[in-house]
Length: 465
Image (cartoon, rainbow, N blue to C red; front, top):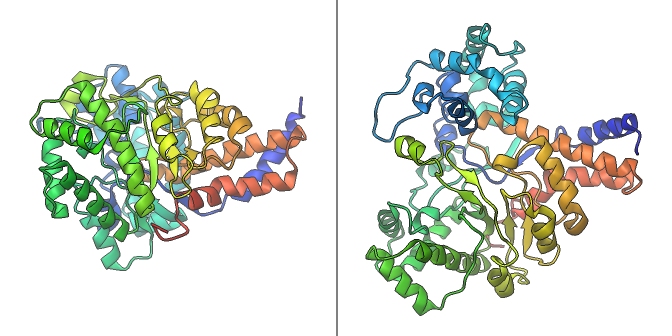
């Protein structure tokens, strides 16, 4: 066994290599209005609690409903409006977060972003709240100032093809030097099971100037909107499907299915088929226009139906599920997996697939790269297990570096820091076992933290090149 003192020393040296490198955030869900408007953050609760479904979900599990945490209701009904009351409720239940990444991220955010050293508890709730609130009134804590302080070289937000991209247009018009780009996320015009699918398709057609009453017009609208995204700097698309299934329908079969969908005559099986087929269509579009494809399968969305009925999507009601990749992705990989023009970054919520399916797939197809552990797996322990499971078959250079995938803007540097520490510890263990020379570990450390995500997501070149 390696000497733990030696390994710890090596890990600290390797972490120092990456500690001050710029941050590449190629996929996430920060609202671009935050940076476009550059207004002061409202208060600690609405910044750090209300939009964070990691936090509200844990409290819900202990019987504290989102209404009491200020999470808006779908029906516009009353919810707790006093931010200090919301903050005190979190502090009174802070023990629920012991050992969780949510607590790690929040405590590090308090300390490193807001310079608040007082531990949060029921007794210190107001002290911590007041300290953070005071910081939020200072110009140095406005969104653009924090963006620069975080050393964010690029931040990708995520928008639908139904978005007019006005916030991104404002960022460009302002001439601010921060690089904020979008990600093309077409799920709401692809998933036939969404209650608003038809309305979304019509809206996309209006923005694209295309008739989406036909399948050909639908595809034309998607291509047009992709070009609109590319024009504001977008380099990737993102697809969050329940499964990884891909299927290549003939144009006539796809058109008939689309026509039935417009008439409201499709089943759940039809919806799964259409989603799977559209992955092939998007792969073909990516080959043409150069966008990197990201696949985020494996979430059973809105599993908590009561939570969805009250508060809508993305409030903590989703659950991971077992996911097949070997058979599900075969149509896509047989058609395009060897094409050097295609780049697919694949994520999972099912870590049982790390070594059994994902690493061998990424190690066997040039078009496929493994995305970082995300969502329920974006924890120090799971990130370490990811490296241990996939490196044998995929190495480091078939992985895409770290992707924070967060809505919580102020936690971005903390999440990247945690990932860099995890990778430093793993590389140090290889050096201590004489499995990797130290100089190569140093180079790999910088690649994982900075160079790989920048290259794989085409952030070092123009989209489409």
